[in-house]
Length: 366
Image (cartoon, rainbow, N blue to C red; front, side):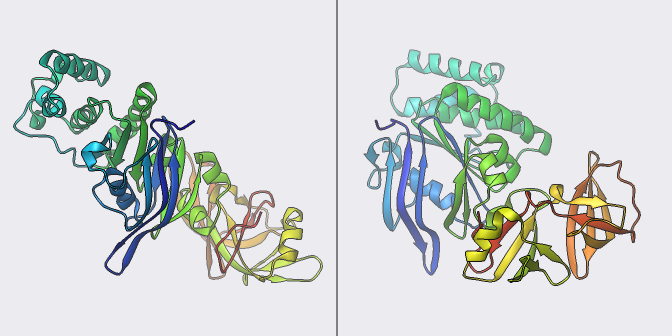
């Protein structure tokens, strides 16, 4: 059965001059799903959104909304609503008129317009603001009006391009939760663009990570975080970012990864895969919160000697910057961890917490 409100992209490609903005892009946002397009600035995520909206025409590939191929349809025929970071409200109109505008444009009867404006205003808790002009509203209130104007047409799909980026940090956190709750209540398929990984992780049912126009991985927030498909995803998700070490495999019993400043025995669960791998060049990855730090400098086999270089207090935890020769390793520890700059410490990378990637392709070994 075809979902009425799913969005499907098949082999979409878009080029601007010499730059390939989106390359062989395949993605599905299921009916009623909140899908987040995540990636660094310039990775092509807004171009994907604009192609879905009909504001850009893909050079190749097909875009479906529901069971309709929409490549040749005008934006207004696609049954989508866009919310931008600029809100794009009409400054000379009241909140009521801003909300009513899409319906007036579509020649809805006055009674129906009044009823829908009232319903949307109640849902978004902006009923008391209907007589005000946009300049009399706070950033959060303006954001709600922009959402209301998009919702009032009851579109099949919401497309949102960094809609919270103009808000202050506290309001942004509040609006994230509100927006996610609202999306579940109205049940409209939503594709949401952001470069903020915390926003993506907290809001998305599914996250699609892009880099340089190419889709890197699609999955639930847990899947993306705990099972990154490549070096880029592992490095992009998580704060502080994953520690990476270039290693060469020494094929002697036991198999060892030589990172130059230290050696690391290949964990049992990866022995077979590593042994059969054609390359001997790998990247070892470990997240800062998985690094175990010891003050006892005797340590176990596989522990690595370090020197404490910088302490970054974050209130509920500390980031330790640890020097291993010329390498810098970041570790997250409890604020009760007491140590001084220059102290010699030992660190361990638990075998069940490390990631191993092929150096040439960046692909994870599983």
